[in-house]
Image (cartoon, rainbow, N blue to C red; front, side, top):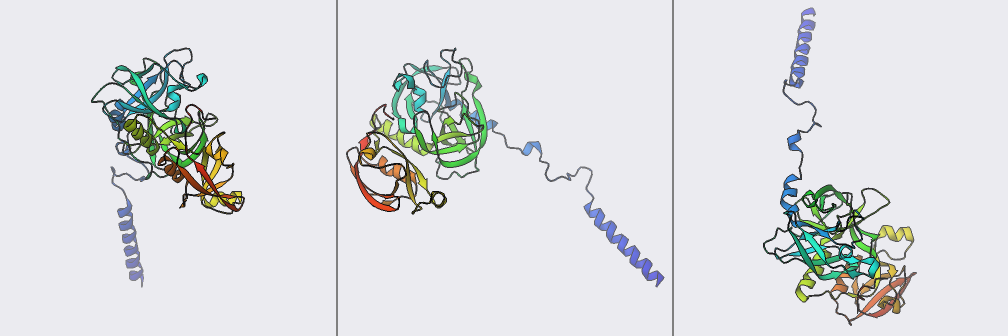
Length: 359
């Protein structure tokens, strides 16, 4: 019996030693799986090197976003070259003087990172979406590829390149990083209440307006437009799909005759419907009605829910904008709305956006 106990004891000790030996790390073996080799960390340096030459600095004397008020010619914004022949997307508020009745600023100077400067021509503007298309006379320019916001998800990593600097800082274009915090946000912009914005937590500094917001593949998914001055790390961008649509028409026709009915809307979903006790849970809720607009003439008001346009049901407010974008000025449209639980039909005539009149 004693020999059996000794034998069992030796066997148990052997198993313990064997198990312990399997668990003992070699001297050069990493024991903390949470420690990441610095060489494995992602760097934006190559993307910055590739893309920053296509990001331009825009100078003006009257831009609303001057970084240094005493420095005439300070950066009033940024822009991104999207065609080799000199077409640039920027913000509408970068190229207009709000205090002078939304007049276009002249001259507008564009500086590239190689130190070259050009006088740019404003080819067209989309005031409601804070987009402007300008052009410099040059060929074979570096460009950024335009992506789409359709596949962008909340939480996706993004980065912003812009020019928040004064004259002499052309070579110091900055890059900030973050994630997509939300989509289809509505926020009070410099021009109007802007719907369908992308919210990001990357820093958007004075001078970044009009610059590109990129996805992790280096494609432009938005145009930086504004930041919340009351908080930190809340910035907004115009979806690139909206900017591209405006750019295509401006380049093709020489102008942008946007049809509108004169409303700002937000998407109605089940959560919003429950919170505000709406009787329906899909559509576009009217958040603002512009004076003397077709909507105002037709009697539409804040809180009315647009359910359909010409028989096409709306699930999001972007669908309303898509429909209106395809309408010609003078077209008649039929809206079905819900007003405090009562469905009504309203007929409107699409009008052209009054130039410079967004009140």
